[in-house]
Image (cartoon, rainbow, N blue to C red; front, top):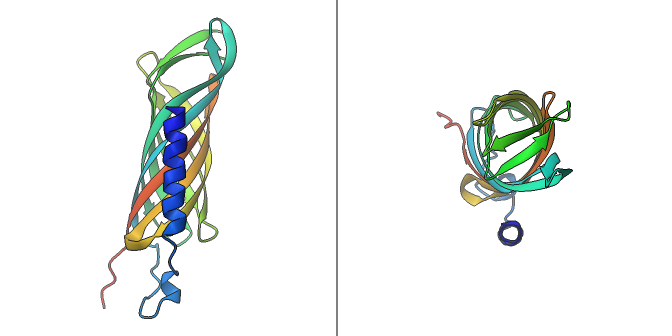
Length: 189
């Protein structure tokens, strides 16, 4: 799975860099569109890295494949609210703060977030949500960054890195290659 993700990332990067076109404001006859009122759906393929993983009784870093599916609504050109959903594709064990080993079976998280985009490609996000698993649901805090390249027809490819702190249990890092579709608000003349 790890090598497949690296291959996928290289393919997406080559497509993104090979499809470079001038920004809409640089092309004759194209107006610059505002993000305000736009909707965005994002699909991500990545890995979740767990620092307190347990393998054969030893605490080690554990890496598991993951998918993400996110929805964002842009309140302005710089601010958005969203819902991030991640599914880890494996069962693993972690050691909590009390040194107790707990099992996490295919955990999925749902996190409402606020997104701030200070420039054209880079975004920062934060939120509080829940990680669900058969064994127990855990509250979490998420902080992250996204970087995206715009493609024609309101598509975007990029990368995202998020840090999740499962309150009093464990931490994880998620790294993903993302593909997004943006539906800008229709402007009435």
